[in-house]
Length: 343
Image 1 (cartoon, rainbow, N blue to C red):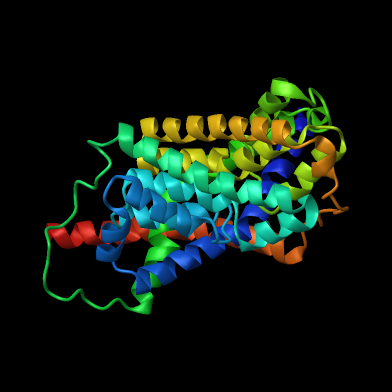
Image 2: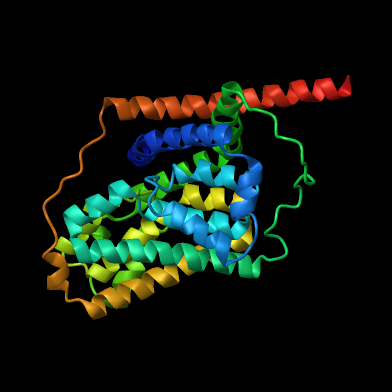
């Protein structure tokens, strides 16, 4: 029992260490967005349900180098400032699958064919998942509490307001969801038999199922998933199943799913996950059918992931401190505002 708890704590901390730099980056970017982007601009670009807003969100998300952790604060910012559920789901889907860094890393390790397919699938996943969410959530996808149109120029935001939004408001909104997701992901990582990652059910639909089961709940970012996919293919897993892992792994994990549940609702989150899984299986099947495994393997090169370093551990501690501080600060501000209202 003690050994299991130790492993659970170790797995959870490892996830925190991997996620922390990107989450802190995401909160910082959210602060910058709050400073330079107006609510009215987001409502105009991404607020209306339909293919237009979904397409813009997908095209916006594909090149941005944010993982499934960094994307949560940005998606929360977009949704909170008027983006439709479909556009939010599209951004959540396409952004963590790719990015400038992961595109280059995919080309370096997996070759040009795999890279083109991965980027194309990320864009298609964003379009389809977002469109389906808007299609089935038409009545609830618009923001109901938008303020009426105001012709007067919006007040200028200070750097203090931006930092408060990105480093207090958003972290306090997502703290419970993130911590819950991290604990669950650490539990799954400690329980998952390691031999499942090395060639078991390596071909056919069972391989797709195993890749989905592994990738769906676990945290793995777009770049970190590449050496794992490389290792899976090198051990005999079909390239299509590795592609399923590269799609499902970065785009979903317990933290992202719980956060999406809060941002876009239960039904929209279910549509988002189901569409991703179906599209990943279709892409994997097309890859295995259209290209021989040998063609894909010719693009593979040796790569070994580096262990966490001191600054990553420090960033993990910083993330936990930030979440605790944000929750404390938000409660204090709420209590202060309540006292002012009562007075």
